[in-house]
Image (cartoon, rainbow, N blue to C red; front, side, top):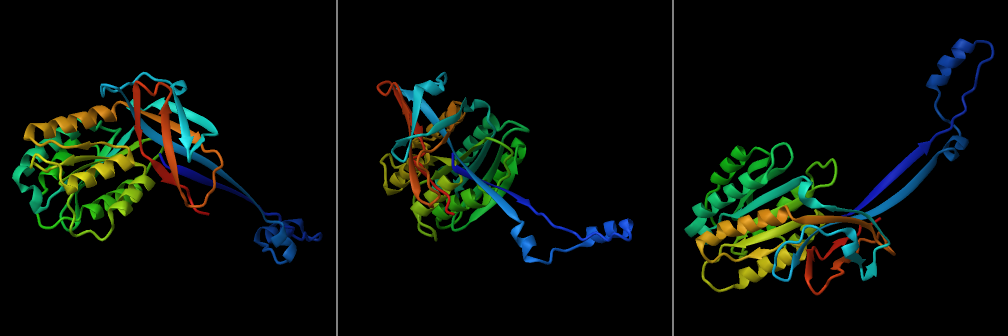
Length: 323
């Protein structure tokens, strides 16, 4: 759902090559080797530049009972970009069939040892049910002080399962660094041949005592990478703590959801709900009004015409490119 700026450049070079009248064949040979030597040659270079601005947003719609609504059309919404209606809606589609790139980030610090194995098995079941061979791809990152990729991008669920089982509880927690790394070094750099969705499922208690980047810097990188972050709290105290509020902030800013499964069986339910949501999304592509490539943060709001009965959830904004 990020702003795309495409630079099209066509360079037309006109060069005059002297012909030697006395030998046409020799002249042809010399022409192929000729190099521009005059200022007139420099002036003959013309560059045509055109910037095409388009924002892609993935969003979810629920009714007032929290059930997913999957049968809406573009006429059921309006797009507000930086407090102004979008100039043009270029595309609107149901996201169910778009390829998915997903990262599973698992907190392997001391704070989650008690139910680590159960969470691993729940994560494996989620990947088995979500990743479609030759269509979707996922990677696994465990983190304590540093992030560790135990399985890189693949559509092979057996390899992903092994990657999850390779995770081992460790020491301190650098959650913001891990999220930043997964967005910048994995998802943002992953090849893409067309429209797709990017998501991260983050299992953690939300506590961080080792990161070099801040919470907001990690969120900004997720927004730049067009990533929706779903968080699953590993806090089992029965009360929301400081870390849970951090997880809520991350999910809310990226258009995801925060889950708080205080009992073990609720972990599997959280994964199941995320799986269901990933198959119940919409995507809209639009051209913003009054757009400027100034690097500034611009807000996004997808508004349902039936505001009373429908709730739309998407990321809150994006960063315009800077010239």
